[in-house]
Image (cartoon, rainbow, N blue to C red):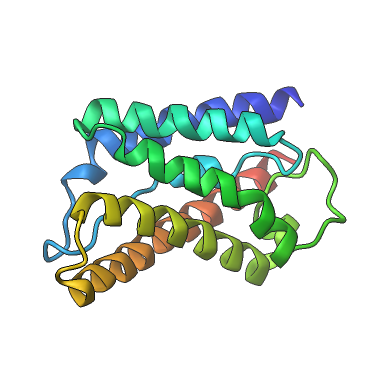
Length: 172
């Protein structure tokens, strides 16, 4: 339990800091942006109460909003991602997981973790970029931005997850 709390705090500080200092300056062709801080929400233990998940989601989004001068956009997107996290886990993985299980390649298997990540990141990005655009005037451009950002973010998350799995195997 203590390991999960320490690891979660580490993920929060590292990924929010990386997002704010480095990744917010990356805009591929003015269309795709990586949002790696979502990885913190993905890695919360499965048994985390929904109220705590939503509170942590809100605080994560609010922290990013504070540093990015985006009033409430990231907080709203993180709240939506935190809200769908538990049903997505139940849908893709099932309910036979212990409460202290942390989502990863090893616990969800590669395909399960990828589907889980893709679904939560898609919800997050859809809400975030819809709020940012505030219009459906150029729907196809918005859809392209969402899809490219999802691909970029998921690629980064999968790479970080591979590194995390290798580091955890080295600890044991």
